[in-house]
Length: 142
Length: 142
DNA sequence: TATTGTTATACTCTATAACTATA
DNA sequence: TATAGTTATAGAGTATAACAATA
Image 1 (cartoon, protein in one colour):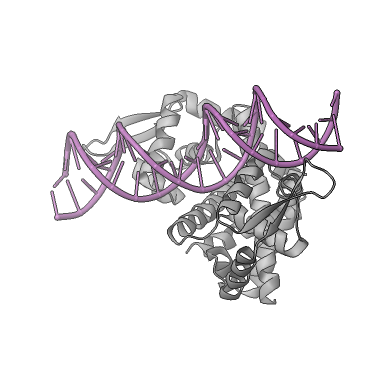
Image 2 (cartoon, chains in turn blue, brown, cyan, orange):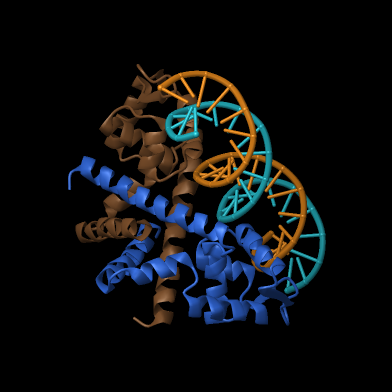
């Protein structure tokens, strides 16, 4: 691929990113959905069990302070709860509350986030291609 | 694909998005690169010629007011200039300045944005898969 | 009345820096 | 001295609402 075409393709890709992200935000803010990061944290806590802020930050490639804000917002909403670590007084264990778990179940059952619903409407082959791209994106940040 | 797997894959994809976007922002802010949107606007003005704020907003799927902020920032930096529309007094034509054009040329020659450089390091096949995903993302927002 | 653009304001997400408590 | 977390502050990006000028 010629250098100019590469650049043009990269910016077309970036534009596509932007379109999808702006749509996610617009839909989420007009229907009380959680943000992508908030949802991802709930999903992780459900699938892998309790974790600390630092662990969540590492898992999502964010700074601990940034994750702290996300965690505080979820805790304010009553979706997760803080518990002291049994032996290390510095650490705080985060876990889903019954309310958080219920939200996860209803969200999953209802395919309630716009993104999941939209991807679900794609053909199987498009879905496969999209998820393949996910792994390639990870390579970019290695 | 089972519903649960679909949801998990979607959130993994969203996480990948987030990682790449946070990296882009981090690199851009620490090296005086332009933001993705700002770069995309310059690229469009270079490739397709002068345009109005409303046209740029439509092209990038943003609200005119939001694009107005981007445009103002590029104008403040001296990269684009405003000219009155010859017949419609409401419209303002935006075009690259010599400084903006020079920046485009040097950016392209140096592969100077992190994203372009990172994608350039991928294998040809990965690049192809990534750009294919771009088209699929567009389907999501249709 | 409809459209283009600007201004004012606010919200979300994320970052850095400084601090406290604990190890 | 190092680590986990919190608080304060700031910046980017985008949104909505209200307005002015023009069509």
